[in-house]
Length: 87
Ligand code: HEC
Image 1: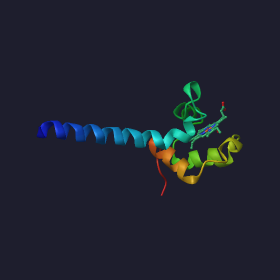
Image 2: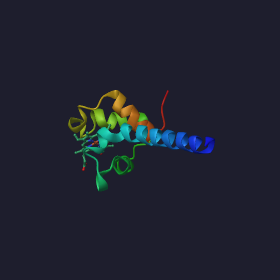
Image 3: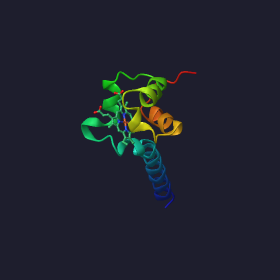
Image 4: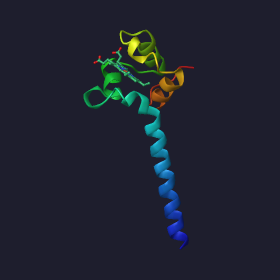
């Protein structure tokens, strides 16, 4: 009985973390699907750091498409994409 409880707890935790990961990119994924997924766009635009990402989305040719994205959204995406963070 104790084993089953532990197993259930683990499943709940794993689903929780997976859910968090999705939530980070959910806003981007509304527009970025399939061939245009964010990770592919990031690779194509040679974006390596969180700073590059913020610059591309704020000042790049597509800034207009990303006006509604908050700094938090961009930071969350950078974290999910595991981009380097400049301090
Ligand atoms: C309202 C729709 C929309 C949302 C929301 C959106 N994007 Fe975009 N994004 C676009 C479009 C359209 C392009 C241009 C696609 C193309 O060039 O084919 C683009 C381009 C990009 C590029 C390439 C920029 C460049 O300079 O080439 C990156 C990187 C990117 N988006 C990242 C993101 C991230 C990260 C998020 C979430 C924080 C996000 N986008 C949310 C529509 C959106």
